[in-house]
Length: 310
Image (tube, rainbow, N blue to C red; front, side):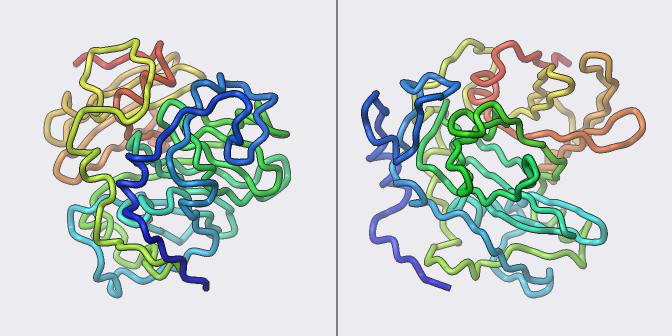
């Protein structure tokens, strides 16, 4: 696999190079003529198209072979059939997208460090398996992906294509788990873990966004219509039948469980602070997709969201 060397400081490059897109600019080579979102609210994040390289052939290791994770590192877990896989955000922060196939199912694990959001989507769209890349563009601080087959842009948090031939097409959101590495390896001792053998030269021991995470400031303009929480307060975001609701993790007691209703559906939601582990299930015990998100991002995409009040 080709090794790509980056000569600049990745985090500083992003901070220094962000710029708003204006009509007539190159837009990183994407056609925005049929954009469903205001192009004046699309920003360059710094790196060009594929400057943040997505992973298309990820390699995995057994739990016992992993020596590059700390107990409190966050991983995104996905289970299909008899296979459990962990995608550490320590690795995803440098790639943002992992195109994978697990138990025959093509999936995209998408992480946006600016919004704190990790979501998993089905890559089989309209009968075609898509390979997603990082466009280098942002909308409301959230990563805009693109599929290499049609060069359509896709919004992670909006979960649909916002420009190109697929404009308006929705993504299928899949259930995943958010927890510490220590918790995941105890739960899935025979699972598989994303390897740092990515083919790219990155310092996976470092966090390029440490300065960003340490403040409550946002890096890009985002509409702030809701101020009940601080910008980067973590919430558990859930959408059921078009109704969005957020649960501040600070509102949970240690490993507390809450029975609630979103629309006509009853749910049971819990959050373990020590394990950084939410669970969201319906009345039958089936998992419901959720996303951990900074409040500023969730309220930007879902300004009418309910906010759980304990």
